[in-house]
Length: 186
Image 1 (cartoon, rainbow, N blue to C red):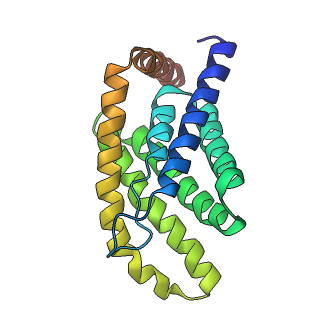
Image 2: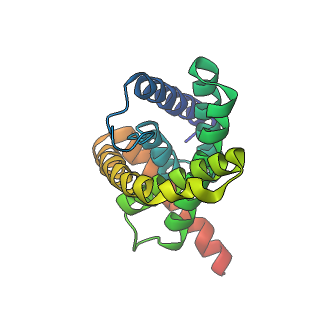
């Protein structure tokens, strides 16, 4: 992939993530018994970025999504919650993807991200409220985070298998990762 192609691809992924995030924010919460639980459809694009782009470029997609979504429809507090959740989710997905290489599927990586996204947001809430009792809500949100992560993982897996461009970029990224790994071993 040329530098121009990569810039266009990053821009397209970022724009898609922003649009999905804004659309999801405009939809009322579907889970009345779990306030704050959402599907997290914008994370679909972040997972695709993790599997099709180098580390620094997938992080650019994540940051562009956070910044643009906040500028177009958020506040400083929503940015703090989103940033911590997204950062913890992103780092955990990278860790599981790297350490679990062939043992963990896209669905497992996504489920991990869904659960830890909620943990990040609850950590910010407990910091703001100055109490750890906020974390008592973690089991409920973890359950929904895992379920939504699995749904997003299934969708990401489908897109990476059936969209030609995404499939090609994933194969290129896997080859680059294997070359980097084999050069470290020698």
